[in-house]
Picture 1 (tube, one colour):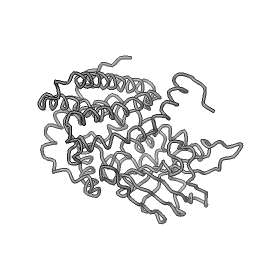
Picture 2 (cartoon, rainbow, N blue to C red; picture 1 turned 90 degrees about the horizontal axis):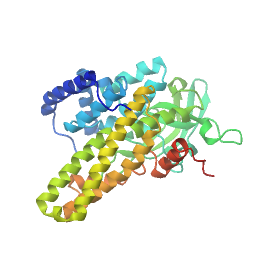
Picture 3 (cartoon, one colour; picture 1 turned 60 degrees about the vertical axis):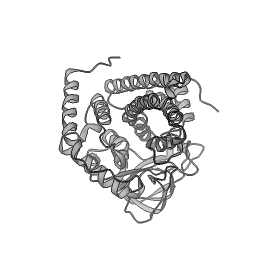
Picture 4 (tube, rainbow, N blue to C red; picture 1 turned 135 degrees about the vertical axis):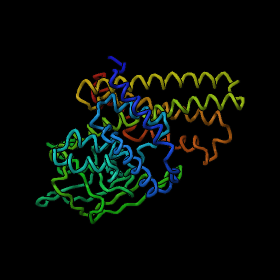
Length: 380
C-alpha cells in the first residue's frame, strides 16, 4: 500500500496551509461549550468560510486522501472542528453522497456544505444501544408518508438540528425476518409535529446529547435513503465513515497533546519519573501507528471507491483505548490539577470515557474484527 502523497496532493496541502494562515486570525472568540445555539452559529459560520474558499466539498466530493490532508492540516493549524455540524459533514452527508438519489443529493448536500443546515443522529435507543439492530422505533406506511413512533437516546446535537438521520423498524422481527432485515434509514425534519427533544447533561456539563421522543411523526417516503428494509446496509455505510475517517483530526490532536504533556512534565519535575517517560514514549509510538493505520485505511478507501472498509473498526477499537490512556497520563502529569474542571485536559479526560462506547462499543468492534477480518464464527 502506497502511503506517499502525489505532487497534486502536496499542492492541495500547501494551498490549504496558506489559506488557513490568512483566515484563522480573523475568527471571533469561540462560544462557551454550554451555549449550543452560539456554537451552532460559530460552527456554521466557519463552514460557510470553508465553502466560499472552495473547501466545502472536501468531506465527500474530494478524494479520501485530500480529505485526510484537510483534516490533518486544519487540526494542526488550530482551526475550528466541525462541531455542531459533524453528523451532517462526517456521517449523514457522506452516506447520502454514496447512497442517495440525485434529487436527495441536490436537496441535502449543498445546505450542509454551506453551513445552512445541521443534522443530528437518531440511531441509539434506551433498549438498543450496543445491539443497534434491536431498535424498536416503528414506522408504518400511510400513503406517501411513514408514520414514526418511538424514542432515541444519545441523539447528537438534536436541540440545534434541522434534520435527523433516523433508523426505524419498518418490518417486525419474525422467524422469517431477522432483526437486521426490517430496518429503514430516513431523513427526518426536526420541525415536524410530534418530536420532543430533552437535552442530556454530560459529566463535563455540556448538552451535546439528547433524548428524543417521536409521537406519530410523519416523514415523506421520498426522504428514505436506500430501499425500505435495506437500512442496515445503508447504516453500515454511515458507520464506516464514523469509524474510518471521522476521528482523523482527533488523532492529530492527541499527538499534539502528547507533545504538550512532555513539555509540561519537563517543567514541573514529573519528567524525572522513568515510568512516566516510558508511558509517554509508548503512547507516542501508539499514536504514530494509529496515524499510519489511518493512512492505510484512507489508501484502501481510495482504491475501492471511497467508502472506508472494516479496517475502520480496528482503528476505532485501538484509538478509543489509546485516547483514554493519554488522558490518564495527563492526569498523572498535572497531579491535583486533574480535578479542576476548568482545565482543558480534565474535560478531555471526562470526554474520553465515552469513546469506548460511542460509534459502536469496543465489544462490538471486537466482534467485527473477529468475524469480518479474522473469519472467526459468529457467537451464539
